[in-house]
Image (tube, rainbow, N blue to C red):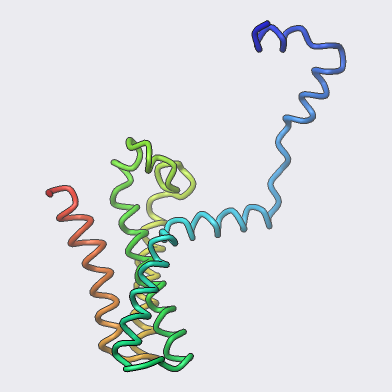
Length: 166
């Protein structure tokens, strides 16, 4: 018996039970907040960030000729997370048109409709701005400029210029 036929031949009371089970539970404020935070984190491409943090820490080890202090490490890696995350968000914002038609990327937050375009762009820009200010004020200007420069390169030079031309 086909699934559609089975559904039409349900026992009395079974239909009501199915309706109760399948009814959506209203989303609580905490669930909504948790889902929103999770979605915005997904925009930053955390898997790629982990690789970039590892690379950044290795560069710190070489530059320090040893293990850098915990404060410097935390501040530098925090700034790196912000700048790489911001540039990833801008990458997703810019590529939303092609992401929507590719099976691999169609479930990303912007093409999936989980985040609107303008808030995503603002989020990416704010992350990069905070990164630059944090690194400038707590680590050093060179680190800040390199971090923001790397974000610019990925978001603008690679994503907006090279990616669709090469």
